[in-house]
Length: 202
Image: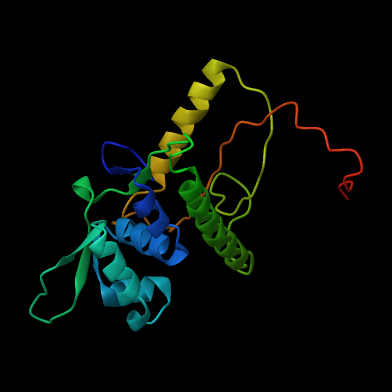
């Protein structure tokens, strides 16, 4: 998910709920990685799944207006295209008010982290994965620290740039297909005390 101006900002809880499915997230992300448009056969090959198993999710995404079906070419292959402006990736608009979309964002994040865990575990079995140096491509980390307002601005700018770099479509000279997932969250420095008699963490 990268530059907001190149993609589509979505805050509708129903649409976010639809995208909480890891399979639908994969379809949207794969379409973006393929330049915004692809045949079902290409999507199936990229995802390592049978084409028949994708149609249910593709129809749901079309009905929601997130992707559109392209008129078939002479071979009759079904093609789909991202419906966002310029074919860019989708970005979510957070509304954390009581009547907002926080619950749907939570479900979306759960699906996103499931995909990230699968990608990371599969990469661990790849003996050719680069795990050190300037071209490192396999890395899991968690950091916790204090930021100033200027630090937070810099962190967001860096994440925006990382999102832009890792959302580029397939083209000449782009030979590394990479999955990047990040979670940035403020932490209460004074967590609630456990109630007397509650079980201790182990």
